[in-house]
Image 1 (cartoon, helix red, strand yellow):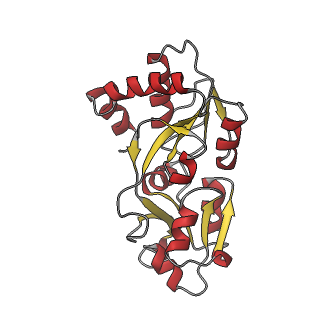
Image 2: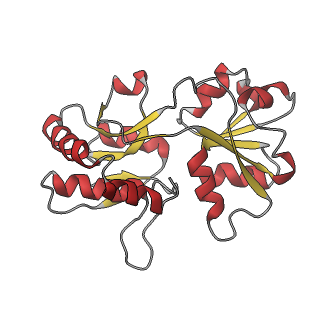
Length: 229
């Protein structure tokens, strides 16, 4: 069982009887089958539930998330599978205004939308955005809709995720995706990895062995290119 999010291009919910798609879901399927898993199921959830569900044994592996020292204390990460810089969804008229966390911090009344529990909240704090101007939501769609409706001025996520979200049919009306120009939190482009229960060492090792051979191969590069990387 792989827990995942409705967050293109990483995870895209099942439609019409087909399994979930997205670069992370296809990679998960390849790695788990290569590790000897006969059947791979999927559980759509929200970001705040990913790690608690893993620790409660509701699922044995979760979609890749950013690797942080705090998370590494409670989960076991695979080898990194991607590196992703941050970006913002803004209203089109603000595309040249909110281009960094510092720009949002400097605007006295700008509200930043984030997904609850994701690393962008802490990055915003480090850049000077006060918590009173941060609105937290359970998923990417809710955060982006807050921008569209004027309840927030920008929503923060990965730049790749924002571009993919706005590429959905009718999702991008009036909105634009901009890449974060802030150096805070981006000194090195953050990496993401699958996460496992700390006791599931054998499963993690088997998945890592598959990833070691697959990452960077022509098949992997073709997979990622299909999702805009």
